[in-house]
Length: 170
Image 1 (tube, rainbow, N blue to C red):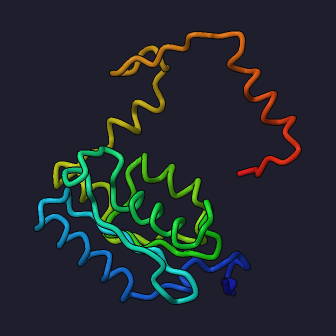
Image 2 (image 1 turned 45 degrees about the horizontal axis):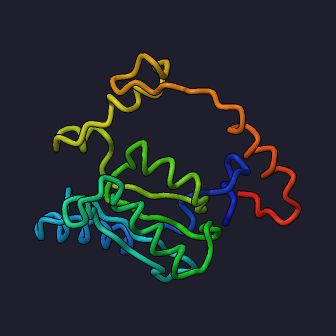
C-alpha cells in the first residue's frame, strides 16, 4: 500500500478500482431484482482479481446473517483457505451494518470501499441506527434483554484456550 505524501499514513485509496465497486452495485441490483434480499452487493479482491462476491441472500436463504458482505467474506475465506483476508480489499454497495462491520473487522481486510451510506440505507427502510443505540445500552436494558447467567466453568473455557500451546490466535 502506498503512503500519503501529506500524512505519511497508508493511503487506503491506492488500490481502489472503480470497476469492482461497479460490480458490487450490479450484484446489489441483481440480487434485489431476483428477490434474494435487499439491494446489497459485495466483492472481495486480492492482487487486482476478484476472489469472491455476494449479494444479500437473507430472503433466499431464510438467514438473517446472509448479508452481502458476510456472504462475500465467507466465500473469499473458503476460496483462499484462510479465516482472514490479509491483503484483500472489499468493495460494498453500501456502508456495512453493525453485523457486517464486525465481520469485516474479524476478517481484517486491507480496506473496505462503499458507495451508499447508512443514511441512504435508512431511506430504503434498512435503518440500523437502533442497533448502534442498542450497543451503547446496558445489556439488561436493551430492546431484547441480554441476561448474563454466570457459570463456574464458563471462564475456564478461556483459561484452557489461553493455555493451549497449539492455538491459532485471531
